[in-house]
Each structure stands twice: as structure tokens, then as C-alpha cells.
Length: 482
Image 1 (cartoon, rainbow, N blue to C red):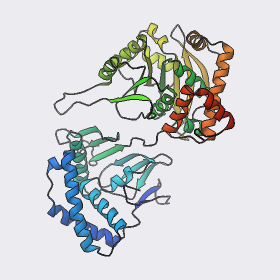
Image 2 (image 1 turned 90 degrees about the vertical axis):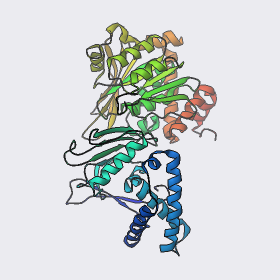
Image 3 (image 1 turned 60 degrees about the vertical axis):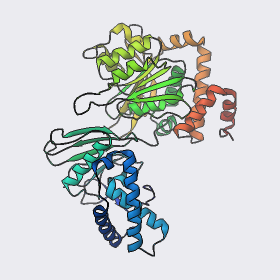
């Protein structure tokens, strides 16, 4: 469903095409109806004049939409007098999308299985990146370069940015958290482009990770124990290895009585609603080059907000890394993503130019979690779980074995367990018992198919506030509240 319009999606494999075709059809609208609707739309444009202000000012946009709606209702009743009210309702929505919105692109924005929607030029079909099938061609084409440019301009105006011959590049965040990049011809030599990166409405949780084999129960239990007792961690990996998804998944292990500040370029983190969470986003400079709010600025500011935990989207620069380690040394628990392929490479990249963190500061990070994406199969896996030793070297505890498709223990802890014992008063048997307890809860999440962020978060909140009750339900395999 796109708003109140029923949409049929089919993915078709054709011998003539090298990739499957993602076909969009509005089953309730016939070709004849489509022609009449186009005639109505052209009449609408003549009858309801639009100024730039009306499309960019939220209040005026709502008034314009209402004006459109009334005019459309009159015209729909004129052309389709015998149509039932429900069908009239979605024809009105469809026409508003066509006239004021992004047309059929908005339909695809409502498909939760799509991650990217791409216009390469008016001479090519729209492409999409599907969570299950990867890149697909669609049966939709934005047939005019002016229309692609109009969409880019409209998006820019709505977020207070502009795209023009003098500034042919646009990078913007929409209100829902989706990210849009646009380029104009001749910078993009085949034509104007738009790339929509969709913000996941149903993000991954630890249950998905365990079911898909992304992370083992043993690794998840160990990471949970470390996060419960406020040990800091870096989640590293290559491009599209699932670093931010992992950060989001692991953040549900936080206790509900702590303040969490998240800092990102693009809004991707989504935490359970009963956590005390303040999400913050960076801002790009305006047309005059002013007003930029960087990750470093937000990190410095967050230290004045009395956070218990700080989540950082991605550390890329020296200033961000310095502030990050400063935050850890002043008693904050910090969790950040970083671009590196192994634990050893993470240490090398952090301690050498251009980031250049002093080696003596590195042991403030207790854990390094490495994510990996197999490009042949598309599977994402936790590749390594490592500790940082007092001499600032990485000691890999768990290593992914591709043949067994499993994380295997490769060495015993030399510093992590010592740190945990120091802060918890646990001995070896207490730690083993705690890890087993956590593993039982994780198995319970999978058995009960508790997959939503809030569902997993509720179980975690119960663990921290009424553990005995939760363990009773886990033992009986009964639902929470049941």
C-alpha cells in the first residue's frame, strides 16, 4: 500500500535482460482511467496556480494540497460519477502525488524492501536496490530531463537547499531520515541523476542477526556483557558490511535508565522507544558555505548533555577520533563505527596518520567488532571479536571460519575478562553463568520470533528491571506479558 493506493509489485526474470525487472502496476487503475487522470491533472495545473513558496513552506503546502484535493474531488465526480468512494479516495491521492509529489517514485519509497531508488537519466529506466535481490531495473522511466531536474529542485527547496547550474550537486536529508543525492548535466554526462537512500522503517535487531547467522549466540552474549558494564567498543568493517546496522542492533543491550546521545550524518540508528535517547544529525553548509555542523561539533556538544552512552555514526577525521577518546577518558561509554577490514587494521588506521590517535590512549577501547560482507553471496557476518591489550595491540578472541560459516574461539582473553572482573566483582564461574543466562534470553528471542526494535527493547528492559520474572518466562518459553 502506498498511502491508500493498492500497488502490485512483481520481479520478473527475462532472457532478454541481464538483471530481473522490478515491475510496478496500480492494479485498480486501467489504461483508460490513466488517460482520463492525466487529462484531469493538466486541467488542475491550469486551475490551481502554484508559487515556489507554496511548495516549500510546510503550512502553505498543506493549504495547497487541500486546495488541490477540493478541485480534484469536483473533477473526479464529474468524470467518474458512479465510482465508489474508496476508489475515488485513492484516485485523489494518486493525482496529488503526481501533481505535487514525486509521482510513481513515491510509490517505490513506500516499499520497505527497497534500499535505494536511482534515476540515472531520462533515457534509462529507474533502478532500485532490493534487500533480497540486489540491483534491479524497473518498468518506470522519468521520460524528460526537465522532470528529473524539477524533482531535484523541489527536494532541495523543501530542505532549504538549492541545485542549479552554478551548484550542480545536492546532498540532502528528508524529514523521514531518507537521504537524497542529485547531480545535474553536464556534471553527470548522461543526464540529470537522483539517488534516494531509504532510511529503514523496520531496522534489523539481534533476533534477525541470530536467525540469519550474522552473529553467533556466544559472540552476542559476550558483547552484551561488555556493553552492560559500560565497556566501550568500535565496530569496524568495509563498505556495506553492516557496521551501522550492527551498532543499531547492539544498542538495544543498553539499560533503560541511562541517557544515550547518537551522532550521525544520516539518520540510521533507531532505538527502542523506552530508552532515554537523544538523536542528533550533522548539517551541511548552506549555499554561502556557512552553517555547517560537523560530527566533531556534535561530539563536543554531547559531552555537555550528561550522556551515559555516546553512539557515533562513523569516525573519519583526526578531530573526531581525538574527541571520541577524550570522551572515553572522561568516563563516558562510547560506541562508534570505523572503516577497517580487520582488528589489526583498525589499530593501524587509528594510530597512524591522518587520524593519529596516541597509542597509549587505545586501551580505553575494550572491544573491536569487525563486520564483513561476502560479495559473492551477499551474506554479512561478524568476522572478528577482539580485545585491546594494555600495549595497544589487538588480540582476536573470536574469528569467522568461512568453511564452517561460524565464529570460532581462537584465543583466550588477556585483558577483557580482567577488566570485567575488576568492574563487576565476578569470578570465572560468575562470568560463565552470566553468559549462559544471556544466551538463554537470546535463544528465547528467536524462539518467540521477537523481531521488532521495541519488542527486543521490552525484553531487555524486563531483564534490567525484573530479571527473575524474565528468566521464569524464558525457562517456560512463554511470551512476555502472557
